[in-house]
Amino acid sequence: MRVERLPATSAPRLSDHLDIRPSMAFDRRAIEAVQRVVSSAPIRFELWDGFSVGSEGTSAVATLRLKNRRTLFSWLWDPELNFGEAYMNGAVDVRGDLRELLTAIYRALPESKRRGSREADKHDLGASRDNVHAHYDLGNDFYRLWLDQELLYTCAYFPDPAATLEAAQIAKMDRVCRKLWLTPGERVVEAGCGWGSLALHMARAYGVEVVACNISTEQIAYARERAKREGLDGRVIFVEDDYRNLTGSYDAFVSVGMLEHVGLDQYDALSRLIDRTLAPHGRGLLHFIGRDYRETLNAWIRRRVFPGAYPPTLHEVCERVFEPPRLSVFDVENLRLHYAMTLRHWFDRFEQHAADVCAMFDDAFVRAWRLYLAGSQVAFETGTMQLFQIVFNRRGSATLPWTRLQ
Image (cartoon, rainbow, N blue to C red; front, side):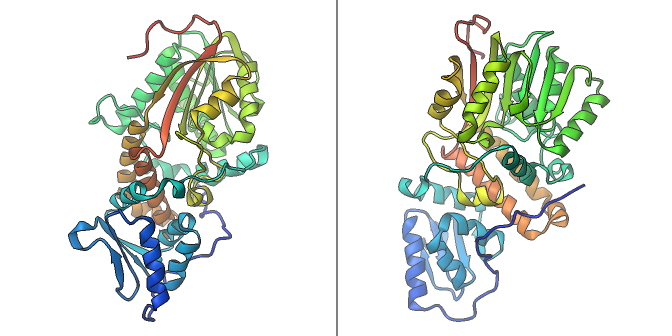
């Protein structure tokens, strides 16, 4: 098993060293300035010597205790990046529930403080491979600790909020297949297949033939081994290659959880791919994390967890992916609350195995992923993030169902 440390960064590493010097007047003015940004949030900010501002006593859902001056002033310089850096490196202690703290911050943060500029990352073949390797090739054993048994690392679908994660992930795969109106003998192409569970499910449960691609070496190896073990290697072909190199003609195109990694600069390439691979009667489905308005992903998440990621708006996807080849949008569904529930399960499972993760990596890695999973759950709960499923087809096609899927 290969494991990777957190990617290198040019940002200053924030020491967890506890400052023994008393806070000065400028320290206190600085922490007051930080608190004012989220003044309506029921949280307390505390300096290393006990000076504090914000909500008092039981009215606070959590207290943030900064350990040193360097951390304090890094928050003034770039709070979006350096809150995550400080938490990851142990330079700030959270007293209280992390998810309640983040919820309070999300709800209190002014809209002007949350909107970033348009992303400018490039997503050529080399950059895309590096980005995927940084996140998905952390070792299958790591993901086995807290994902479901199918190793599905995308939003589940909960027909009942009390459903298990395993049942919800199977329900998600069935929902995708039913939206695509798959019938036995059809050919399906999947762009970005993860560990292969959806491709195998489509072949096993719906009788289709699948070509699925991915550039994660570890995920493709796992998917191929599983296909062979289940006797499906003749009906599912797993290709270790970039989606832009796919060829052939298919009845259905599907991509679950890849679009947020494609990058705006490559939407034209994705559009051309769908146009050249989709048969005249073809239809497709895109499942992706998105936004209601244009905003870059959190700077710390992009640096430490998902390099190159960008959650698009519906307008950007429709304008850049569907309009050029004149594809018709048939159905749009927002599953953000289902993703919040999925992330709640992932967070709880991750916490149960935190000691195992620490043994694989280190404490900074555990804290980073704890923050990432908690923050993601809160982002979907508060509506900062959306989870869209778009069903589309060739203009004029009559192969999709008469009524919406129930």
